[in-house]
Length: 256
Image (cartoon, rainbow, N blue to C red; front, side, top):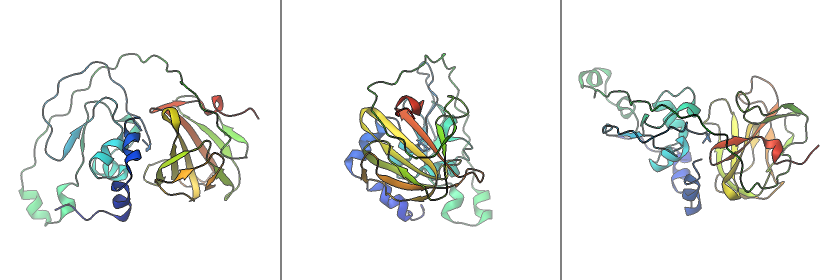
């Protein structure tokens, strides 16, 4: 028997119709966070009941929403160490494991467990560099100095320094599609969906001042700077993505 949903899950499952449209833009964390693209369309066998096989264009966020779960649930149920690394063809559990629904340890051990073969991995083709399209102008989300710049690998955004409690601003107008701390490595995280398929992410906040589903204006204060899940360094980690692909935020921001 599935456990009662938490208040946050109930809130997420009752989001208005516009949020469903966000799934079409292949959003993460994280959120949220992109899937590796694979070449070809390999044929796979059926998946066990309560599981889902990742398709091209899926995101962990979208799979969770489609199955009335949260991204944190899928990370926990599938022991994911890095949600960015899930791949097309991978089988994800989308309902709670049997142990989470009650029953004694001995009775669970006595039940035969379904045997599933690992999903075959398609060989990815070399990805051509993507170019951001229909860029939107943005404002700096914080006033502090830049501590680290985008490099496309170890840093997919920019890190901006400051003091705990410094204001964090929405870089452009949009709608809040995530506000929480369920994505490892990002701490208290806010994600805002914008026009032309763009999404901005604001990580490591001390406090979040907006709720999922809220509309925000360009330059509106949405959070306070902090050091959650940042190894003790007070900073804002800021990312800009279009349909899941990260781009250098400085290409969208005015010169300093």
